[in-house]
View 1 (spheres, rainbow, N blue to C red):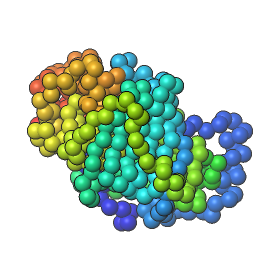
View 2 (view 1 turned 180 degrees about the vertical axis):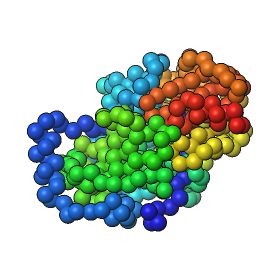
View 3 (view 1 turned 60 degrees about the vertical axis):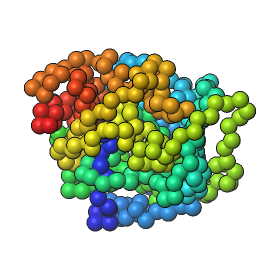
View 4 (view 1 turned 45 degrees about the vertical axis):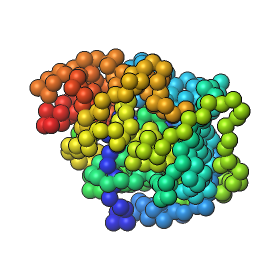
Length: 398
């Protein structure tokens, strides 16, 4: 574990992780697993940790299926279904196509029944595109901008996890979770498996802290490339994953450069934005990390971290919303961006949730199987992979 860098700060939004790819059942699973076990040399957990950290590919492409069942209440825009909006990733099953040819060239396409949304990084150009809205957003990135979605750059004391609706590949999600490995995490291996038709090792992370809602994380590591190809996250006491994201097809070669070329079709609405609108992270998806309903760098104080490890709680003061932040038709200005589910800001959604109160004040609670979030009436937000009572204690301490 000494090969791992310190994990970055827990994003102060709802600590969701993406999900999917359920294996076939019964005898098929048994036969496939046996084949994988026979074709891979034994590796210890420590060896697999080193393998993942050293894994390097010139590029990759494939199809990713994501599913999440987080026990969330019914809210506008949270019914994932076959939507092509990135905000729908917080629930249901979805299919994405992903391409990468290094840190400067990344494309993620979310495929829906009636459209497609894309995040495209091609050098200094960052595009978001929504075919349903016939709208695109373009940002010219500064030199040295962060490489790609889910790169995990940052510093702090909590495990980093994506914001709701943030698209991620299995490798990016695994990178974030592996940065949480420290004495608070037990690391072991599971029997090998087959993911996207390729033999894979399985690494298991299990929080030692009983105060977290996360029971375990299982990461499938491609036997040939050592790149994570599937991630499963289990709630404490659960036998099936609440979140899963994995490749159904995987090609460890760089795609053609033309894949990353993008020009909006004639007649499409194009919005030019500045890098400052993206907050402190400037890869595809970076504009979706700021807190609910607001971009970082717009007057919001720095989030406060309470606790450590898997039980970390982040408490932040939300900036004053812009005039359009709570508009039913507002999605933060990013075509195809996650924004608030259903086009609503996250504060608007949270205010539809059950009211709670205590010595810390009053507010609204969002409780799921893997995380809890509280938006207080005085404009604070507290989130963590912990029960609500832990959030209340953190709010009272601040």
